[in-house]
Amino acid sequence: MPEIPNVLIVEDEDLIRDAYALRLAHEGYTVTQAANGREALSRARQDPPHLVLLDVMLPDISGFEVLKALRADHRFSTVPVLLFTNLSHHMDKHLAARMGATDFIVKSDVSPAEVVDKVKKLLAEGGGVRPIANFELYVDPDQGDAAALASLLGYPRDLRCPQCQGRMVLQLSGDFSDPWSRLFRARIRCPACLPA
Image (tube, rainbow, N blue to C red; front, side, top):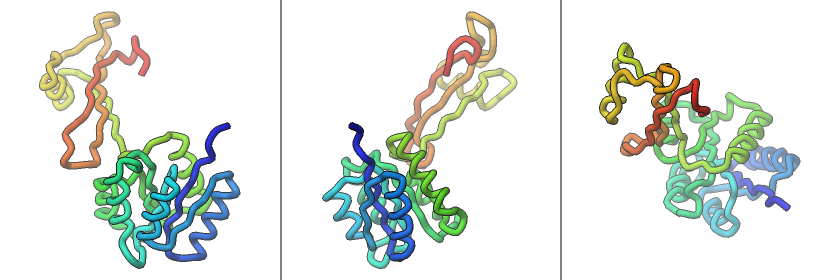
């Protein structure tokens, strides 16, 4: 029998926390609640969650500090953390991504049903280290950046598929949310001959 996912809701407003707890419990999830950051960390360590719905503005320590502590603990390095806040400033979203949040939701922009859908999607995808970006660049001598990047990676600037002579695709996968990380995976494939 599959394990029932445990969702940790960290929210200092009782009404909001209870409303989401009831909604998620109705969807079949086990729900753990915390009213502040220290309680959240304690509960996470006692009963590790499969996903954390984390408010940013908390009465003791900020949600960003909770996120930082979770990501520093190897047990929670891949647990999806969905920041749930009234903050909507672009820098807050950038900071959230840099610190390892899986996603960022502005409370006033979403309905409870949309939050539950987001939770379902993140749990179905599994893992939430950081937002992972994937890019596909057609390697064509007329596309300077893609061709130059392919060349830097050791591929010819005019890279054609040996089977169909179609343009090859350079796929990059990596953690592009962290400006200090320079690690990514590069792969060349032909979209006509090889499945993604």
